Length: 79
Image 1 (tube, one colour):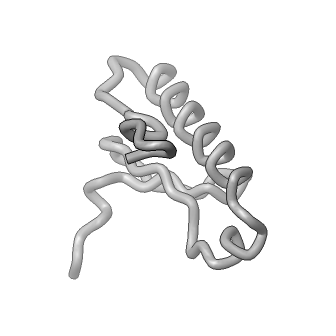
Image 2 (cartoon, one colour; image 1 turned 90 degrees about the horizontal axis):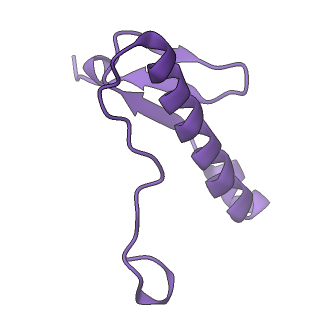
């Protein structure tokens, strides 16, 4: 639950957009929401974060120039 008992909402939800441009738009939206979250944290808490990641249903995993990792769900498997 969110603050003051209100139901929490996801930071971003990435559905299965139809084209590549729409996918990148959704990823950018999720990254913007991570930025909002990061701005609400104290510098000490930010320093303790291992990474900021957006998990997608796409094929590729990469690190953006801003340091946020975009990770394909298919790449999250134990070997």
